[in-house]
Image (cartoon, rainbow, N blue to C red; front, side, top):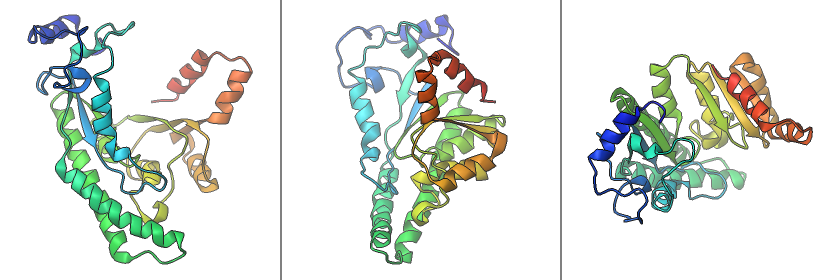
Amino acid sequence: MSGLSRGTGLKILSKHPNFDPSGPSSSKDGIFDLPFNENEAKLVYLPVPWEATTSYGGGTSKAPQAIRKASAQIDLYDGDVERPYAAGLFPRPQSPEVRRWNRQAKGAARQVIAALAAGLKPPPAALSVANALGAKLNTWVYGQTKGIIRSGKIPALIGGDHSTPYGAIRAAVGVWPDLGVLHFDAHHDTRKAYEGFPWSHASIFFNVMTKLPIQRLVQVGIRDFSEEERAFCRNLGERCAVFYDRDLARRRFAGMPFGETALEIVRRLP
C-alpha cells in the first residue's frame, strides 16, 4: 500500500469490524461500497459535475454519480497491492451549487455554440454568463482541492469535462512547485479560448501551460489536433513532450515492448 503502512491500513479496517470486503454490495455506503468517512480516508474523491462547454455530445456531468454507482460492482482485492482500499477512500457528495452553475453555464454556452454554427455573432450576455461561471468553478475547485491537500489527504477529482482539473492543478503546483502533468487523451486541448470560452474543455492545457508554472506536460495517445495546437506544443520546447498515437502504433508494429515505451514516458516527467 503505497504511502500507507500495513499497520495503519489494518488500524483503519479495525474500526469497521462488520465490513466484509468479499461480501455483496449493500449500495448504502461510499465509493466501492466502502464504509470509511472523510476523517479516516487517505484519498478523497472530489466530484465536479460540469460540462458547460462540451461541443459534441454530452453527459460528462453525470459521470461522478455513474462512477459511484458502478463502483459497488467492483471487487476490492488487487493482485499487486492486495488491499488498496485499506488506505481509506471517501467520495464527497456532489455540490448542488456546482450542479446549478453547470445548468446555467451550459444553457448559455449552447446559445453561443448555436450562433457560431449558424454563422452569427454569439450573444454577448450568454458568452459572459458562461465565462463567468467557468471562472467561478475554477475558484471553487481550487479551494476544495487546496483544503484536501492541507488536511494531509490525496485529492482525486472526478469530472465532468476536461476543463474541470484547472483549479486542482493550480492548488497542487502551489504545494509542489516542480509538478509535471501526465495527460492521456486523443486531443492536445491547447486551443486558446475555443469557441470564445477561455475556460473551454478544449483549452485546459493552453491555460495550464500559460498561467501556471508547470515544469512539464507529457501527453500520451494524441491523435486528433489542429495545426495551431501542434505549433503551441512545439513552442513550449522542453516543457512539453508528446507521444502521438501514430508513433506509439509504429513502436508496437516494430516489436518494441510497451514496457520500454512506458519507461520512456515516465522518464520525461520531472
